[in-house]
Length: 176
Figure 1 (cartoon, helix red, strand yellow):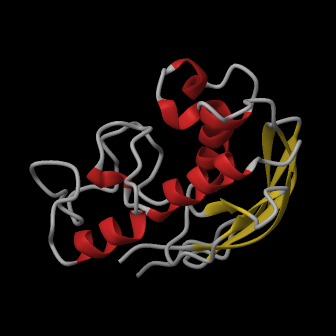
Figure 2 (cartoon, helix red, strand yellow):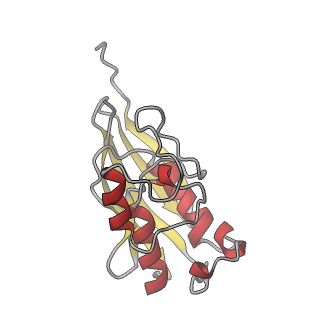
Figure 3 (tube, one colour):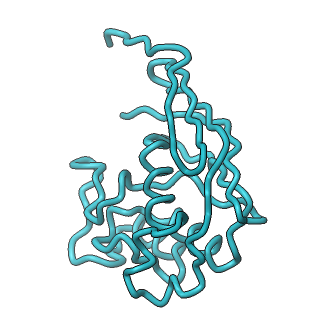
């Protein structure tokens, strides 16, 4: 049993993502990163891979990850599930309501460092998926989070793709 975090957010992306960027990032968010060893690998149809993975099929690797052994993906991403996705217009990132959401700061930093900002890591990887990426985006706005296990309430502020965290209500730890 783990914890989750609920979010309320407004994270604006400027300039807005183009269709290729938004579609790829939505597909990236659909998959369990524990099934991948390459941080930029995304299946052509991530929903099918997710369904096959839940039925025990092995979508990309020889051996399936043990879901109880680790929540650390082998591809260097911060957590198996990305909980932020581009909105329909590509002008902002939104929490997708995923159960057991966590690591929002780490994911926001990862997304901007790898796919959005000028000089992002994916720009020089040579993969054709990124041919239409502009790598010229900034993220600005705010995300409020509340952990369901401790009641911690915090804000993540984004200014020019730099993120700061402020704790509004400190966590309460309960002796279970």
